[in-house]
Image (cartoon, rainbow over all chains, first blue to last red; front, side, top):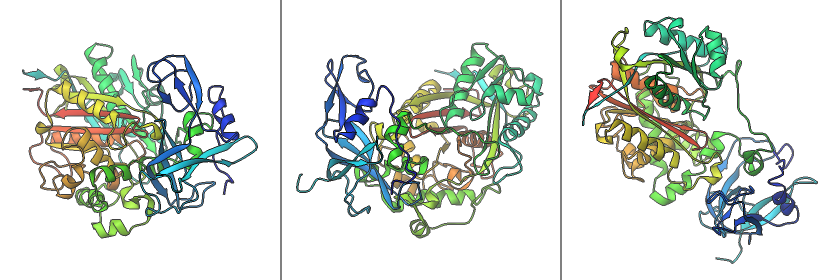
Length: 137
Length: 383
């Protein structure tokens, strides 16, 4: 499944995020000036420009904002698979895949609640992905 | 208030052939189109002192053509770069930085002969936070907002299929279109799925080709061979280069910004536009653009197209070449949209719309990360 899949190479500004993912934590950053949580990682707030920011652990709860189901062959994937964008409980959005769920329009309902899980891809990379959040609403 | 255009298009041409051209390299596609456009203007290469291009940098294209520019713009923001180049060229001409500007496009998007291609490194933001999830180019990414738009506004799959049906009717009138055979809603919906909810006919064709424009100050425009086409206004706008970070999947900030700037500069409203070319790499892009530019209320574009308002004989003829979906799409299509505006205003289009006085071209770059809008007119002064 993961053979040939594009994997991230961390930079100094994103390394904490990928370290967190290896430990099963979804890490965001929050601005201490304007209090907004943001993603992807950078050492300043993209809303107000403040450098006074801190790393926070996200709850992992999210909802399905939108997706498209891919039918072309992409290295590391077995079509059909959905590329999804989810809205995290804290506000930011991120791209992801939805796991433990049929990759069909019937199973993938917009706004459905999701929770983060982590897929180990290599020695150094674990990817945050999301699964349907059981009985949670 | 009466306004007078300050810059005009005096030369406009595509490469001698477009389509599937493995015998021509990308740089030669730039040059072939440029030579055609310079000849169209009745000029010589030595007359050109400003140049803009993307894919191949402007100094590369200039040197290949033997142009010695004093001004260049290599803004590379994807398929709408050409509208952005036009806007920058207008400013350069108005401020006297140069006198005769050539805008070129050449792309071996199909045959990949001498092709330049941007790709994301694995340590870029896209490489870290999008590509590991199977994102692989525009079909996989630009399609993601569609379901949110459908849920928000009730856009139907049939309406989205009608975009293809209507544009194929225009393509049938265009001898240079890659796809000319009629297609039905049922055929679109029954076609091979590419990136649900988009089927193959809802994704653009992939071709090789080029195009070029020559611009001068409007005061000099009458001295050239062709009937001048005046630039009334142009705009550019930007959004996140990461699709996942687009603020709202039902509207593009880049589109709204570019469109508002072009209309503001031109002083006209959507009511005055007789013809338009809305970049259609995928069937939903004109749906977004019609709403974001204000031609219809946001959310009503699907019905507007489905009700044949943009079709032959409709009140707002759109994508009259067949567009990227049926005519041609080299990868960065924006130049072809502007060239059709020029032909319609000159009265030389294959599918000529009667009495076009104002024509608009609107482009997208990247994954809604950039946009450019250009408004052209056959008359210099308007009020």
